Length: 183
Image 1 (tube, rainbow, N blue to C red):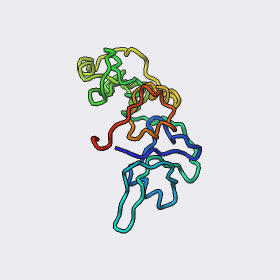
Image 2: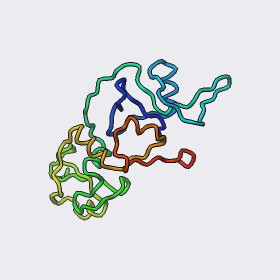
Image 3: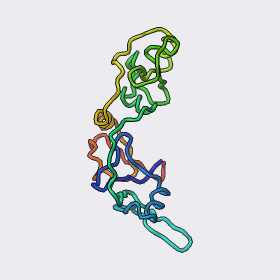
Image 4: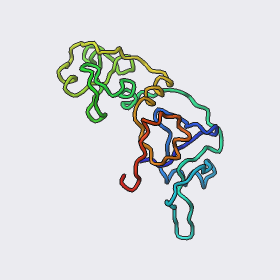
């Protein structure tokens, strides 16, 4: 799990979908290379070396402003997110491990792997569909970055530090602070 929230110089996350985070090792390295500035640290979690100790970073901000591309990459996770983790044939909600990617127009019939031809499907529906042409509940499309942000912000978010909420603008009822010791 990534334990450090990465912010741009304007104190906004570099990306919301997925949320821009770093591992604590990446954050400490970037800090010593002068690429980030530590904004907030974890309470009672020091980073120790043989002759050195510092508070463990929780929120870091880039030393230089990074221009956002607002591009949505074609990934399995982004397809599931676009489809809100619902099978596009039966409409049921699933976790990502229970979903597959299905070609609306099967590859065997000339279909291609692109935003406009793939949907999230549960294993059962994908298997029963086979190479037939079945129309999904919502037509596949290439989502905009802000559409993906809106979808992401409608889903629950687990964060390791309550200090992150000051920078996320995520609806409070959907934010769950997890215990790092239990994770």
